[in-house]
Image 1 (cartoon, one colour):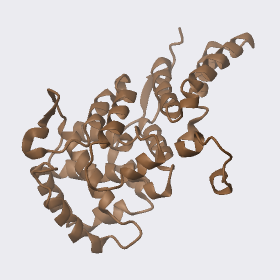
Image 2 (tube, helix red, strand yellow):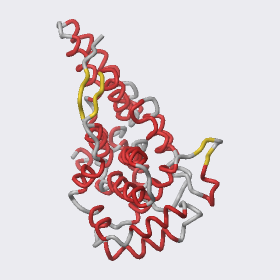
Image 3 (cartoon, rainbow, N blue to C red):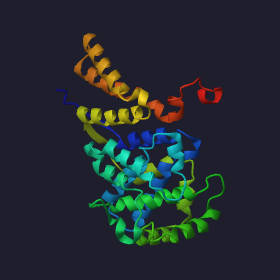
Image 4 (cartoon, one colour):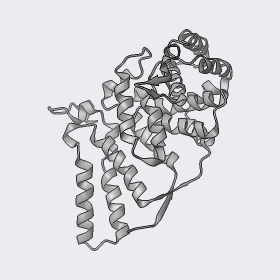
Length: 294
């Protein structure tokens, strides 16, 4: 059994996946990263521990990973609540729940669209909802209220009033109060709309490189392959099949155990670029238009 550990940044991995999903449409505009930055600052403002904020950080980067179609992803940018939001949240949870390194983040993702409902939102179906889910919900909705095509500071008053009007009904009042205090700091808004947002995220997470054994990496990349393959019914098990075939061919060619393990991971990830292609194009039964082809 291959025992060698590999060192890599879980932050870079999550950031890459987040970017790939948001690349489905320019309209998404790095929404997951923006919501993550806002959630981190709200968490800091209300006194969350660094460990809680780190969980919130990774959940934020991946919170919309369960959105499979372009329409579904664009619907997420509509501010008004809808029960259909829970579908993508539940799928995101199912995709990540078995990966030990981010299993707690999976639970945060699962409930990130549950309204507070004057305290009834403390639990759902008999299960306690993490407070990080409610913070992420608030940050997510703040992010979609920003019009990124126009100057941001002039929008702050309207956004704050909209959020305050839903305190208690949709959002946890204490978290809304924290956001209201935070909203007076111009850096928050300027960072969120900045082209250097990646640099700001890299500064705040402050996580060292993590060590993962080959089995953990295989487990993580298998999750990513499911995310890719679930986007189309035509490719439901495609990446797993390619991965298995590639490993068997590598063995026949005399590859080492490490090379075969690497081949398996490459097989899982070989279609990762499909995340940036809308499901409507992947599954179109007719010839693509020139615009779709481009």
